Length: 332
Image (cartoon, rainbow, N blue to C red; front, side, top):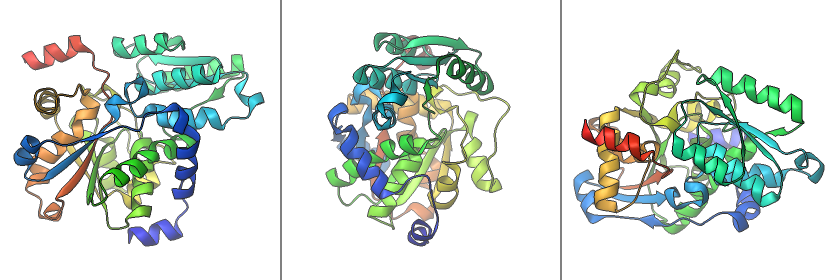
């Protein structure tokens, strides 16, 4: 069915866009390693392969989409700079990609963003503009900045250039480990999972794509059940990078091609972070650790639908951890 969808449906990106993105962003990103652990294989009862986007420039996968979008711009477009709104990793990525291109970056950041991610934006030269914590405030503030400066909006996820850039993860991972049968991807606005899914299913139509989502921000899981985009009045999760809602470009991919969504609570996310630190020896933020939490969850382990998911790729999407929050969560 997935193959038919890819051939008959029009999505925001496709394998050709994603391969073009790979060529475009090659000089500006790292090809991140894939790690494995016999201990985690034993705990999960599967072979796990961790795609370490926590080692990426800017500390997260977001530089892929941001650099693809920014280096796609014509010179006259780029001259007035770029603007975005983000709680952290996308903000830092846009700041860094804009710095690499030598243009201004106006970054709208909600007042509850993690301090470490705000510092990344400043380090890369982004101009910080504060907004209220709501997504509506973020968007309206970004529109105001756009009107005042003429900067080009680089949306965090609902943009074909962003989706295509994120999809380059699949091109790398399926080259590094050719016989992966399942990929588990964090889900928020859907830019990452859309790109990963479109690329992976073009390469291997039978591959299984599972989304991992916090229970305190389970809008994607609810959307999947309802058959339409569902938003929440508020979100409550330690995974600060997974609080956005699906967009009109990302939702069709999630609706048609993502096989299922596994929700996990914050306690399990923190446990997975601890395992990444203690066993894998990798610093992973809550949003990045959720894939491991999902594969260890009862919903996955006890579901016969996934009994043939034996070689699983897990995207460790970022490693920008607010250590103060982390120590408190470990102490609970």
